[in-house]
Figure 1 (cartoon, rainbow, N blue to C red):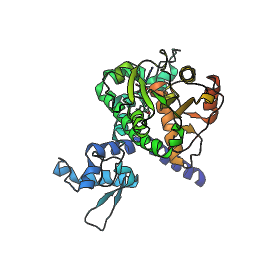
Figure 2 (figure 1 turned 60 degrees about the vertical axis):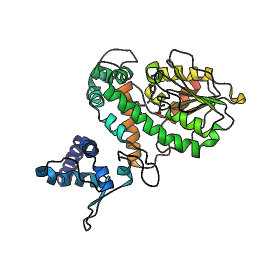
Figure 3 (figure 1 turned 180 degrees about the horizontal axis):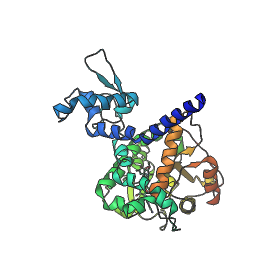
Figure 4 (figure 1 turned 90 degrees about the vertical axis):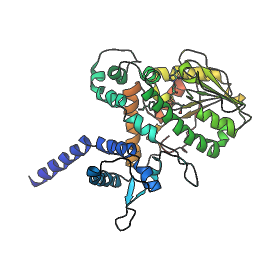
Length: 345
Ligand SMILES: C[S@@+](CC[C@H](N)C(=O)[O-])C[C@H]1O[C@@H](n2cnc3c(N)ncnc32)[C@H](O)[C@@H]1O
Ligand SMILES: C/C=C/c1ccc(O)c(OC)c1
């Protein structure tokens, strides 16, 4: 009986923890909305918090200190300091010494009402009978597929593209500095689903002899201006149009948006765009590999969060090595190499 009670209390606490887990997310969003990381960084006054409510801020901070976003120095005059995680949540991204790559748009995108509604509709979507592989929980909740919603609702669309821009600024720097061998011998590269072109621009600037192009939906690329002379934009649909030929195709954060059938279709089109391997053809994919060299519990959990996010928003998925290999073989590729240099991807 004693043991049983302990177990019941433990499971109650576990359910409570998960019932309230989104308070972790929402309190972080609240702190960033208030600009608290900037206030701590610049020692400025917090903006327009009602004096009568200032006392409550300490409680929000206590939770965020517990989650590792701030350090509390009880003895000192300056009570809080930033941690590496909250340094990524500063609105102005240049510190004195180096650029801090921002993650604020991803935080706001993940907690946007459309994303929350999409997750809220998941059980209904799973029980709904339609067989269309383009349907998603996101569409059920928000009335249109995510790409249309992104094009038509600027509040969501801007966050989406900003989130991708921030990530590509960061990953672009790592890839061009630490993975430069990948680009050896290439004369041209097309970044399929390359969005606003930040990744392609990083490659174009680091390797001026590579002619780079960005291939994305017409509504995404139509008002983009090339930022380097070896960079251009091409509008099209990666499932319908021919992908422009190049020595190499890049797919960064693309295939996790699509189910297996559509991913194979995209991969076949990419294969048609590049020469054979003997002639220097190459497909470069930046995405997660589940169960691959992930050491800690939090990283595994993060990958699983992404998987469910992709399921809800796009009917996409994160894949383990076996599932990736299956896609490659189905699309007619004969070999692949996995390089783990980008954290969870
Ligand atoms: C998750 S974002 C990744 C953007 C970029 N590769 C990056 O990592 O920053 C996916 C991109 O695919 C584009 N996309 C979606 N459907 C597409 C289609 N049918 N044809 C071409 N691009 C598409 C979107 O506009 C978006 O820019
Ligand atoms: C709410 C977030 C949506 C989202 C959609 C497509 C992606 O590829 C993605 O990558 C991180 C995030």
